[in-house]
Image (cartoon, rainbow, N blue to C red; front, side, top):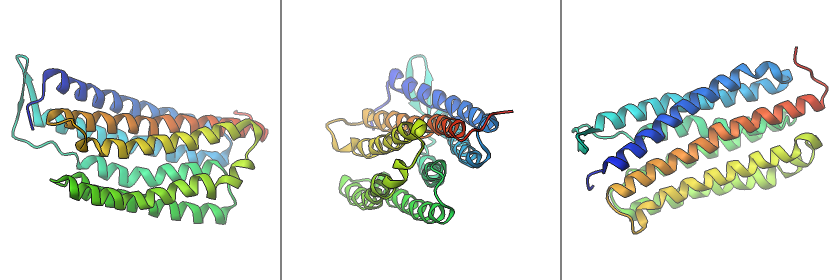
Length: 251
């Protein structure tokens, strides 16, 4: 890979720093706001905060790894000899992506049996999707990357089906005050998740060298911000509106 420019190095550096702060702040907000919603929605906020807490930890490790891999001195970026460890992302996704789906299912307050079934199926599909994508991410050639990327698309399509068809009737049963926000959360989840494959495909474009690395890091970071912190705030707003519709008043 060609050497990073100072601008590229600082762009990724600041993106990681901003995301770390955002995930930490979102965690505090979600956990401290649990008393503002009805008891049966507090688990969804707890899990949403857990998602951002896990992400904050892994972005701290990613941030450290970036600093260890490159140094900026006198306007020149040099490699330190320590490789940048991007595997932290996949460890994070393996933990957080199933939880992201679980928080969406919980906030809809389905019957207990249906909640367990859908959460189990979606969680397993999410874990398989991440596990299949990782070999392609670390592959040295684009053909291998394409094969594993295609395989990981299969569980992704199943998740999309469940979100828009399997949960369609449940969405229509949501209170009028919250139905629109639930729909927004579902679409935001889909769009942010759909951005990951686009970033995954950056090595196939005309971009090359350090530009590819920067594009991948910044692209994944933007998607994480939307899918975790952004959706987390929506989960809170949905919980508030549904709690109010059910007559709950914070102490």
